[in-house]
Image (cartoon, rainbow, N blue to C red):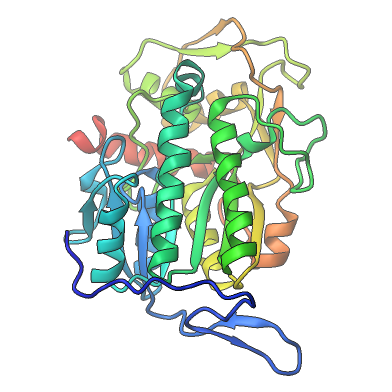
Length: 365
């Protein structure tokens, strides 16, 4: 991929200049971006689960979108025709060519490896992909004058906080290399905002779940580690049972409690965050519903929705599993005006079940 015009490297002045498309109110001094309608946006990892839903939401809002993905974990079938650019984040010159040839104005950054157990077994893989890849992306953005970024972060940056629900003020103390890699990117974003005027949002997801209401976009991981698709696989006969990892936690029914946020609500939050970016400033927001459900409650919801018996077996606890992770989403609601549309667990499961029934082998079918 070669660009159509030379990239202009911006020399950083001693006094921060306003990036292209930004203006300052004379009376208040507030800096805002102009022309957020019909922007040209690059979505890294846009062939993945959350990224593909965000691409659809952005296009529905009138933005011109390209997906940049190496397809190591994503699916070309999840990307609208003619929108996919295949490449690695570590190929900085390739990224620069993309920014130049498509006149990119903003980035949504979803591309990352996300398996906790894999990160423990191979931490350098996660630092190479998640951290070095993000550094390459930020460097390419700086060289090409792109100053807007929405970053897909995670609740894993908090580790196992003692206080529930979890606010953005909780200490960031990750307990695995995956969470550490995401925290390292957040720190890079903070420094880039201070030094170069980057405007960013780091959106910390809790448990992404569900699928598009039409059933044409959904969750397809290999290996699959998320609870709801695993339970639905058991309902479909793709696995004999679902394992409950521990039933002796200090929770109402002894199983782990998590906050499940619908993937469409996540996509909406990304769009809202893009519209509220400020040069040189960062937003760090939790995305969750504020309602926790236990593993047993999820299994029961899947039984209700599918109408099928689902066998569950109790296994040993997994090392590092916190008893409860529930978001305090009040700041996202205040800053973004974001309120999750899907707050009922059965409704979330219904959309996932629609996807799995119509795509029993995922995107491979």
